[in-house]
Image (cartoon, rainbow, N blue to C red; front, side, top):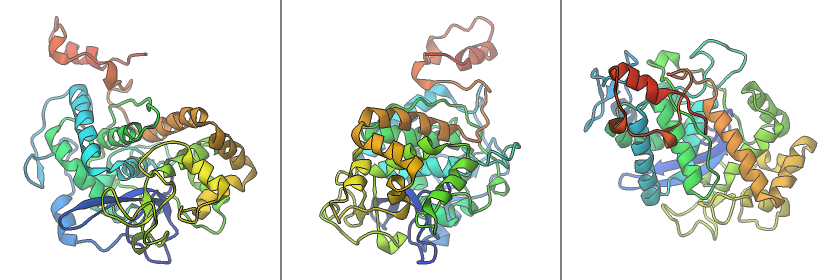
Length: 378
């Protein structure tokens, strides 16, 4: 996915777009969405300097209660602690209930994973879900404009659960946002390793545009590079059912519609669907019917019903929500794992782990950790 949304963008690069975004005023956080990518919006370099500092070691963690890094690291038996992941998920649910930030959290996970290049074997050069989006250099990529606000939303949770990697937290937040918006359960796995320094971030230009000269070819160029196919491209595009676009930030959409003049969150923008905080198959139905000028259709949206191969799946999803949910869940899970390095290599599932305190520890902590982290089949 070469890029899934942006904040303020200039008209030359405004065409970039592919998922939800968020914006913050001095006193309020509100969200906007769009699957597009564009230049970074004017944001305070002072804020970025406070929020993001290059890490010198993969063991470093944000310290609680202030912006900055500490060199203290808690002992752990995997990249992320499973108990902390489960608790972080509950905190994310509370965040969603109060901030209505589903779109931007989905976009954050997608953009961290969507830099993956299947033709590069080495980690982290291959990109993918490795937590690189926490670094200022990558946040300043045009496709990631506005994602600093997503990071601000999640940073208190990261501070609270230091033994959860950014790579896992981004993907956990993305999947949880889909599920809490009424979407399918995503078959997620965890244990992703973070990159340790800004120099390991991917170069700019790996994420998709929303208005390229040849939308179908562009989508295939970007998603095929990730190892995804036509069905997965169309299914993932259905996430546009969430969120809205603001022309002053992205170059796309109307300043306000009958669906966005009253929030939740800040008012304004143009959504793809009437209920833009509900995950369903309305995106495909609305594009096909083309009956409401207040709903947004980007060139990369319209092409799903124009290209012969894409149309097969778009037509199916427009009438069969169960089929869409099934294919979307599989595609989202696949995207969330792209390029990731797992520790332990077998990964683990947080939803079926028993609590550590209830485990017997016959041969010491090391054996207990190995027990808990063992891959489990459900």
